[in-house]
Length: 286
Image (cartoon, rainbow, N blue to C red; front, top):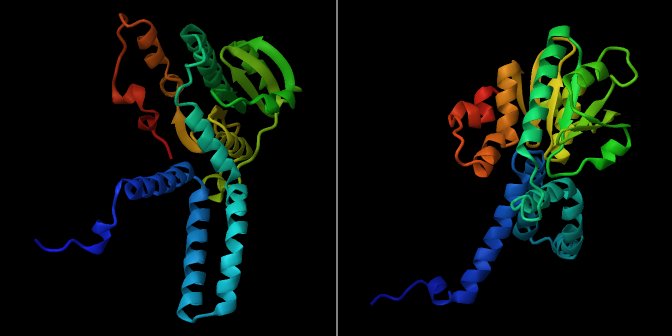
């Protein structure tokens, strides 16, 4: 029987567990970084480290090797600081894998009513060419932004939303933040995205919408003042544009998983299950 390569003679259960753990860590880092600017940071950092280490070893530069050896502890501290927003978002996503375990599920009827009111208000704002910015809070809390806005804590109605965004009224600047079926605050200032790839040719409302989705799992409805176009931002800057009233309703229901919640709570009720009604990207996105 031929001898096995030396690497197979050294593999045991502990080595396999070790390799699997390292692989899972690398996969988790790439999963957290996917679809945002952390991808470019990781790529740039990897290229820099490979180039410097390669040059130091090929040319046998002892001073540079000494610096690299002593810089590793600093890199271990620097990486969490550089990727702090991405790591926080990844941990939040991990925590949302079991959102209903602690009784955090929301009432389907409240969400359905809120979506209907938001949809009608957005369509009316679009027809009137009034700019609007409506943030729907999900699992990530937005209380910091609520506290910096004008407190309302009012029931979501299309009349209220249209009144808030009527031009030259005291609250028309900024965003409204909605939790379940309540408008918590208006005139809220959101963080602007500095991702040039997504926000370079967009206005302030769209950049603010992308910015808050980069820091949370919120869903944001944007009505353009210039064109009347309705868009939805979600999932770290993904933008679904050119929506009408019916398509906006379907996108919001899909992102909020209203049909899924309704089926799970009322299994006897039939719901349409098509790609168009379950996949918001089918509606046309970036």
